[in-house]
Length: 425
Image 1 (tube, helix red, strand yellow):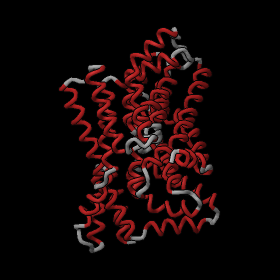
Image 2 (cartoon, helix red, strand yellow):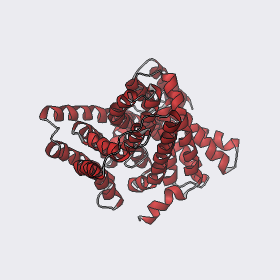
Image 3 (tube, helix red, strand yellow):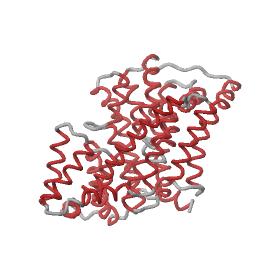
Image 4 (cartoon, rainbow, N blue to C red):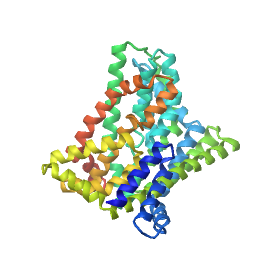
């Protein structure tokens, strides 16, 4: 346990000092390796092994696709269609934010990208329409956590790579929980809007709705092409990521004609930076996972949890509580790499399959995007809305509660995640 203690102490200390998480994990892993008298060559070996995987290629492609969508006007078209479809309902801007985020999530796979792209447009509009700033921020932040849950999902790609599971099956398994969560958010937003008597939008004529659909059709076809290709077995999730990037480029540059050479260069630059950070983080996490395994930390934690109870229901509740706490303090992809080998044996012993546990873990860590101190989506939404953080977090509480209820259903009703993959075999 000595090197495991060194890893955790050094990593926490460096993060508290303000060092980027990836560097903190890498340095802490190196310190642990040296203290344990292992060859330091282990660090670059594990770092490379963490990213030397075909499925991991999907991450930079999905990041690029999300940026191309925003820059190419595809995001605007999705929002225009959503406004035309639900703009007549009370609280239509809030409903539009959730609905638009669900569509965007079916392409980008990232919560932070979703809150930036969708919330960056709808939060100012909601504030202008009379929404309290904290409610506008909470709706956009909560809707953005659909990004990592509704397939494709970067978190599930990292999990599938860690356990060598079928990423396609993980995507299919997450579809129903993701849609149910989106539905729960839509219902709550509508009920909240009626209680607060928020503005009603303009109802378009059928002809105007048809026009908006026709104008937005290329944007709306994008998630159909991507998810249809994955679920239909036409291409792998990694190939789907490349297809999504190419599709976004072609539509943005030649159909909507918003992508200029200068903007394209900037998008590629930003996408490279984001992808490098994420992949370096995964690589360093692989090294820290090796240190934890050598130190037998997973066995110690698993033993502690198993000593509390031998009841599978209680153990699964403990695992969920543990992951919810982890999600409050740790970036999701790091948490997946570090805690999957620790918690998966407990989950399988309680009757969960590798696929179901992957969806449950992803669901848990998505909720962590709303909770402090990390809570990236809540922080981003709050910054866009220029609201008071404590009020935004309070407003996120109801969305979080809906998520917890659906998380428990996903945990204890296996058919929710296993039925669709079995049907689509």
